[in-house]
Length: 128
Ligand code: HEC
Image (cartoon, rainbow, N blue to C red; front, top):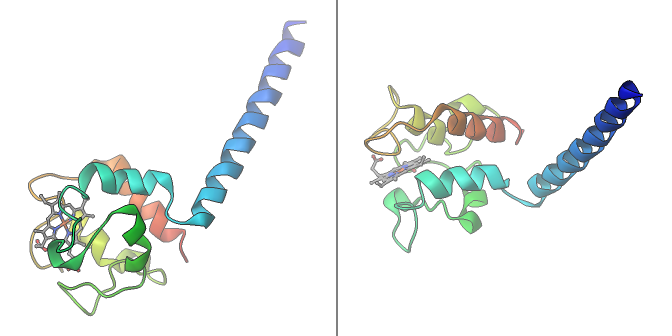
């Protein structure tokens, strides 16, 4: 009897997860996924907003799609988000810090938490 109950729980949990996956897939197709927008909102939009954002880079939800495959201002040879070569994306380089960037690591004076970094990396890798 116990086995039958836990099997039923497993099956319904699977159904719920299936629905959640289908929903998140739908959101991605409609634009920038909610988890990516949340990273920008929590760590970037404080500065990257308004009519004159730093380096012309606004990260409010309605502007994010415009930076996909668009050149950066700091290193114009590099695209902010490079869908063909995700690792070369200038936005990721600015968040990681280190060589190959002009100006500061983003967000200035802080380091983006590793889980947020993963959200950005997975999003860009999935744009191919
Ligand atoms: C405290 C304000 C502030 C915050 C918060 C901030 N930035 Fe910036 N950002 C700047 C300033 C100022 C510049 C221009 C100077 C520089 O490049 O260091 C800049 C430049 C950039 C550039 C270069 C754009 C280009 O085309 O050259 C990128 C990419 C960037 N920021 C991404 C981010 C991301 C992603 C976040 C959040 C994880 C973030 N920034 C958070 C102030 C901020």
